[in-house]
Image (cartoon, rainbow, N blue to C red; front, side, top):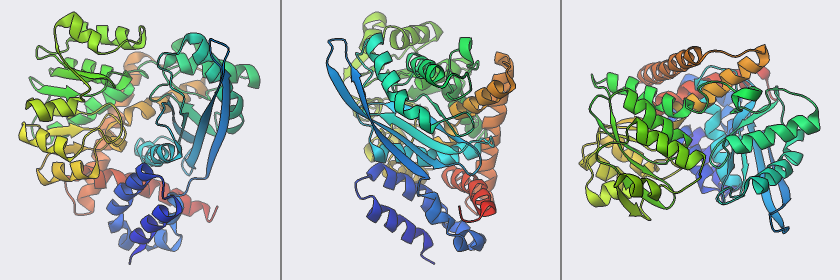
Length: 451
C-alpha cells in the first residue's frame, strides 16, 4: 500500500520550494511505514496526510525603526502545526535564513519531540528573518515589540506558547513578554524561557544541553560505556552548546571544540569549567565571536570552517559528537570522517543537524545515533515544566527540576529503545522516536474525529 509514498509526493508537489520541510517529512514518514499495516485505523482516518498539514500558518509584516531613525521591514511567521495533545508549543527563531519552509520543518519536528516528553504539548514554531546580531538593545526591543504587536492575537497560555530558539535569548524573551503583558493586561505563562524574576524556571537555560548529554549517557550505557575520559566534539557556542560542555565536564568527558558562524576553535587541553564560564560571558553578555576564545587561551582557530570541516580536514580524533549548531551541518563527508576518526556516538543537540546521507553512514557503521527529536527534547521538556509552574503559581527548586528532566530523558530513551524493538528494528533510535511520538499524536487525532 503506497500510503507513505503518496503523502510524501503530495507534500513535494504542494510545497515545491520547501526542501527542509520535505527532508523532515521524508525522515519521519519513511520510518512510519511499519505502522501502516499495524494500524489500519490510521490509514482509514487519513492521519498520515493530515499530520503533515499545519492547522494554520501565519505570515505577517514587522515594521520597526533602527537607531538611525530608518524604517526597517522584516517578515514574521508562526506555524501552528498540531495541537492534538496540548497547546501549540515551539520556539521563535530570529535569523536571516528563516522562511516558511524552515519554520514548517521545525514545527513538524516539534510535534513528535513534544509527544515524546509525555507532557501535554502540541507542535508549533515561529520566527523572523530579522538578525539580532549587531543590534543594540534599543533596536532589539523595538523589533520585538513590533513582532509581538501582531503575534499576540494568535497565542495564549492555553492556545500557543512560544519560547526561544536561535537568535532569541533572554533579552528577546524579556522584550516579547513585557510587550505582551502590556497590551493584553495579563501575566500568564504565554512564553517560556522567561527570567526567574517574572515566571521562569530554574534549569531552563541549561535544559537542552543537559538533556542531550543525559540522553547520550543512556545510549552509551547500552554498550557499557560512559563519558569518562572520552574526547567530545561539540558544535555551536550558544545556549545548547554551552551547557552541553558544562554537563559533559561534570560526567568526566573532555570537550575540545566549539564554533560560531565565523570560526571553529580546537582546545586539545579541554574546555574546562572556567573556560566554559568565559564562553557563556563572551556569547551571552558581550555577544562576541568565538575567535576571542582562541586569543585568550592560545587554542587553535580555523576561520570559515565548521567543527565537522576541521575533523574531516585535520583528522581530529573524537569519541563522541554532539552537533548543537543548526540544521544539516553534518554531511556525508563529515560523517565518514567521524567514523574514520574513531567516533562511537553522535547525539543531536540541534534540530536535524545531520543530512540523510550522513545518518545512513552512521547506521551502516553501527554508530550510536540519537536523533534531535529525542535527544534535544530536554529544552521543551523544561519549558513544559515551566508552564506547569506558571499554572500552579509556584516555583520548583533546581534539584527538583533537574531530577524531573533526568526522568523525562530516561523515559524518552526507553520509549525509543522499546518501540524500535517492538517493530523489529532493535537499536534504531530514529524509528523508535518517530513511531513512539507519532502513535501518541495519531491516537488523539483519531479520538477527535475529523476536525
